Image (cartoon, rainbow, N blue to C red; front, side, top):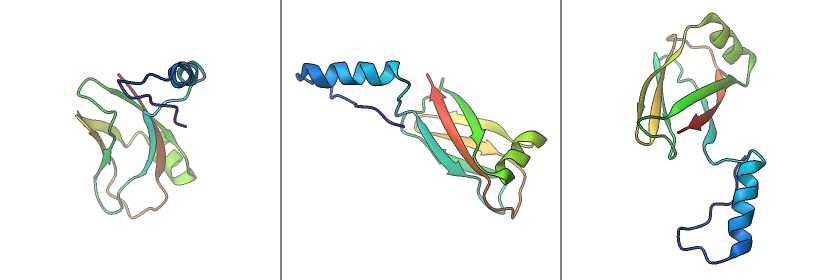
Length: 104
């Protein structure tokens, strides 16, 4: 779910207020979805809002993702400007789909 993102030089007060209301209502552009890479032990996720100090939370969106999540066979192995890396089981299992939220 995304919200209104006013430009730094925004003059329209309604857009500024809408952006603030969107944040209070839980909307954010720091969310997304990815699928773990098949036959690989890592997945790199491009996320514009990601920074070096960001914290990433994952939520499984498919039964196969929930199995991976519950087994504890994954972790965020790297966070950088514009992306993060998830290390996981090297598997041919499809549909390991996750939602993510980035804070900070």
